[in-house]
Length: 248
Image 1: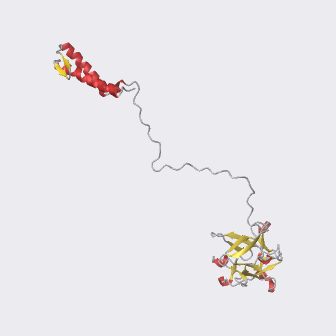
Image 2: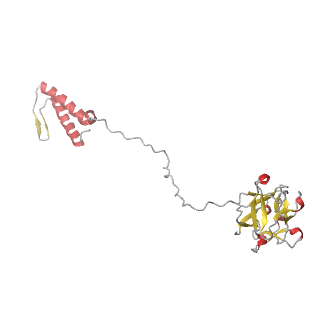
């Protein structure tokens, strides 16, 4: 370990005194200290002692038993220190999320661009037309969305709570403007099977399996009573729908 600083200073002073004695041969005064003249031999010894004291005082590391401690390089990366990672709190066990669409829940199918209008069964009209109408809470505006299996896996029956009939494209039309009606659900026909695909804004597109066309509001009308139709997918808001849970 290195000598204390006050010892180093003392060694430097003594070294300087002895070196002066060696160089001058004595015969001088330092403050109240008088140095008498000395012999040549004493001068040589004093010079050696002086040089040794000066060396040790100025360079204390030369007599250190251990090398001076070096500062450890910083291991921190340049730039601001990143915050410690956050650990998510464990969640309490609960009911698993329900599937969507949920077969045990009914839905209102609301227009994405005129949300007060919902898909409504109109049994008094010819062929049980499906129209848009303001929300009333009636069962004619509530629908079960039931997934299919087998060759129709990935498609759904959309079934009126009021009548138990399926949303259907009249006469299996393949044309733009084919009317939507409700009709008895059938396994052997694809005009009552619908694909349900999500859009980026959280709405859904309903696509008829048999034609590949989508449920559409004619002319983007917001008027109540307008019949719904199928139309080639154009991406307009009149072809987007929100599925709103309406209870069991």
